[in-house]
Length: 300
Image 1 (cartoon, rainbow, N blue to C red):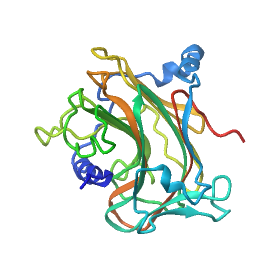
Image 2: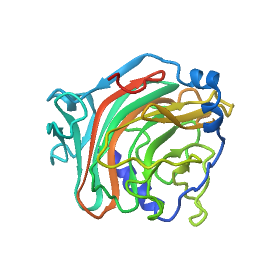
Image 3: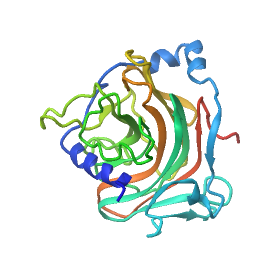
């Protein structure tokens, strides 16, 4: 049986309960420098080729994804209430029931992949959304193989540089210091990641936290976009960046994501996993897009 995304999420968040990075684990936080440099910002926001879109307007939406975890149990469904839908007639509803390992997620595979990918999506946390402490969200993954499930069982294992790397853009409660749903940050696996100081030999996702964290407003639609850019082999010139509502939120450079150009970005995951969910939580998604360059918010 194939290892599904939930297997990776269960192990990773169980470990995050004992370990979390509080600063940039490698490279440089260039957010403020890029914001203040029009030329650098224009380069970072150069458009590319959009190669995937999904607006959840069709009843056949699930056919666009190879793994829909929670579809049969109706934790994944179309929301048609005009009061909360983002645009059009429907959005994707993810329902997380109270209990351990609450999951509702989808995955899209786009082999042979790319060396730089932008992922844009809209999401809305319910007005009472509160995951407690630990959750995983949406992100991108690179693998060297041709199996769409490659790298989904690597929680706690540091990538070699020849196999995989990945990043998720996630809200972080910081054990209650951040209001729900939490401050947005990157949770990443890469060859130079730091070891858990309390668990020798274990390498849980390292957090890239911008100097000025942002907590999304519950009950409101936000536009999120991330860039994951692979480095050239033997160089530390990889990047990741994020935009919230069309404004640059985070930009990290100087990252060695891989040691071989065979490791390319091939998979997108969209959805929510909550380690120990204290209540029923709902998140809506809409207007998903993948591109080789900056996408930006949907034109009004």
